[in-house]
Length: 349
Figure (cartoon, rainbow, N blue to C red):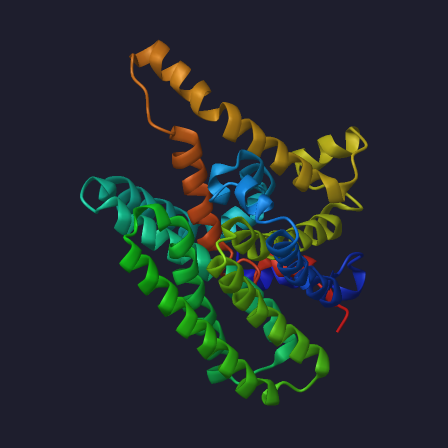
């Protein structure tokens, strides 16, 4: 099925729910809130909060259940839950599945773990920031060179911030200082770039969006430099995840609101569950089940049938695969000409 054929019948005016740019911009309010919380903890509570929070969000099960994994599962449910989308993208999906199996599966036998980790971390940062810059592109309307300058400075700084947080226990003090210095230089370069690029943005609203993305990186660097690692990850994670869910929910309401078109939404309609809640509720529920019980359940079956076990078969293997597929597919499923885009309209500019 061609994308052109899928797109032909729809009319944007018939879509009930829109993705609001003003709502998306409001999500960046988490930035000053986190900085204020950090200052209060520093000057009023002598770092009590910093000492209570885990040194890494990945050490906090509740964080994993609330952020990151749910929207990854939601995007895969949305894509693989519709036969027409699978048919349209089947070659890309099969190709990426094969690549993941070879490179991250077989390749893990030969490629050092840290190399694979850095590749995955860099892809994660790129995915998160590319989404935010991609959303802002419609309102900022930067020249191509300015858009990519902003994007790559943000991603480069973000990668070193990410490394400084998640690899801090395996870095020597000298290496940690070098990572911090590089992150600082790249963050400063991003600030200078934004000052230069803002003159190309035609509207005040666009300038606000431009600076929101810059301050997302700057604030993450700042709280990371103060060793509030949890807050440094929380800010981009929350903005990214809720932005993603705004697309998923808008798609579902516009596609299934009047007439459910697959088994999942027909079941939800029978249960009288609002369409807007189906994907969020299901993705959070599945995240909890997989994170808490997934590995034990798989190993129980393997131990019973084959007297063997697989290390983190679900929390590392399955969820890792879904995450990589999510990073890959999100780069094209919402682009112009995609069948998913026929259920998305924007407002609030």
